Image 1: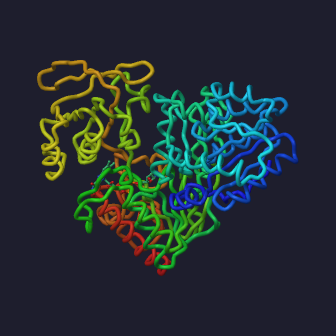
Image 2 (image 1 turned 180 degrees about the vertical axis):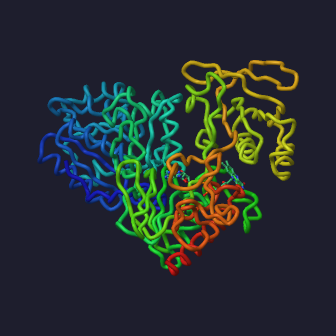
Image 3 (image 1 turned 180 degrees about the horizontal axis):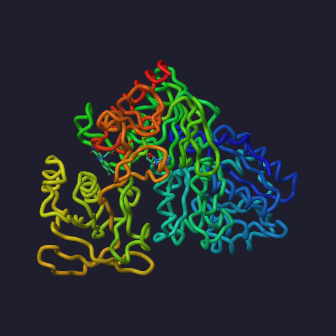
Length: 574
Ligand SMILES: Cc1cc2nc3c(=O)[nH]c(=O)nc-3n(C[C@H](O)[C@H](O)[C@H](O)COP(=O)(O)OP(=O)(O)OC[C@H]3O[C@@H](n4cnc5c(N)ncnc54)[C@H](O)[C@@H]3O)c2cc1C
């Protein structure tokens, strides 16, 4: 098989993907087993169409089919298929029949000898043939180009547009499919998602040569097929950095939420060698917020994903390094160095560390919900599930701003959104601007003094039993979608024995470590800890994970920046 030089693939980069989509020329594929004829067809095609099209030549039906599958996986457009009728093993009609499953809108032309016109006419019905072309076709200006022009014109009028994007084929109620969608969305990797029982989903699985028993299947922009990929595998294939470039840094920032991003921007911009380590996706909780209305400088609000994506680019611009899908499990003191260890055994050293690991949502304890997580029960915003809520009755648990924002967001998709709030009103837990906004949206209902007793469903969520905690009345409601925002906890067990934490696991810092003039027990210096410094000198904490911090984007960003100033002071006075 031969083709014009392939266009270099781009991975996981929105701008790159768009660029590639406009660059990739639609293909005209010709399949003929006689090398002389095959070369002649390709030569004539190239002469007239080579500038705007990619001419792909195959010398058997199987080879042509392989070429098509590869192009399908990459998302390349294919305009015309020209197949010789009499090819051994797989004749032209059989090839076109299979090709129809992969590229249904490509125009199908059969090359046939005069003696085979009856077969060609039969093929019109079998493969919905667009044209049969008699060999020889000299002069091409008269007998060949007008036919191909016609096919190209017709193809341009069809809905054939493909954009080179990562493709995900999953199952509606598969928790891992939902996680992978969320991972791609939160990491700003453009993707299209298909269900395995949809026509296009089936076509992609066929092209990838896999079945639907192991989902999700992810197809990267350069056509690589990943079956049930892990986050780390995905990250490396879609262009996210997973390995640090250096062994030693000035600062390791752990967690890429607003606090970590703030620290990375200020650290790198002030010339410190800075690496930001993130377990899942840049943005942290803020990245999951559909609209942040109270962040300084954005009077019309800004989506959390937009805000944190800008911060990510800003940090990269200043030279910060970012690595994802690395879970930090220990911080150790090694002389003047601080060692950060990863769950997979790797480690990096630095002069200082900033802990910015934020908080995660608590799981609901009601029976029947645990096993349905990711299959109708979602924690945090799961914004990528919004299209799947179209015309459904959606339930949201929680009464804080995050729950309110989610209700407003999902109300644009769902038939109704019901907020389940344990307290008697929203006033105690939600900002006034959001309460007013919710009041104006007709399809949002707020049920106060309400708790979930249990969830129902086997394969996926089907309903909930609710209880009014004043009257004790119970009611069963039908729903397939529950989003939970019920308070958050710092996941800091891994710091046990390393730094001082309060009874809820939040990291204690600065003056709070000194009580009655006494510094922490193992504190080795003859000065008090700096303001955001933990009980390990040179290890600082910023954002939601800090004990008594204000749980807001602005304060997290501010603390991230301030921690960098304190790192400078620490480095100067060591
Ligand atoms: C849906 C929603 C809406 C919100 N809306 C608003 C709003 O409108 N206005 C407002 O001011 N605030 C809002 N908040 C709160 C705000 O987002 C948080 O206060 C802010 O994100 C805290 O930032 P942070 O960097 O401290 O932590 P986080 O945002 O929690 O980020 C911590 C990061 O650390 C990573 N991490 C954790 N442990 C590890 C580890 N061991 N190794 C590696 N990485 C790790 C996590 O994966 C995460 O990405 C909202 C929160 C949510 C969830």
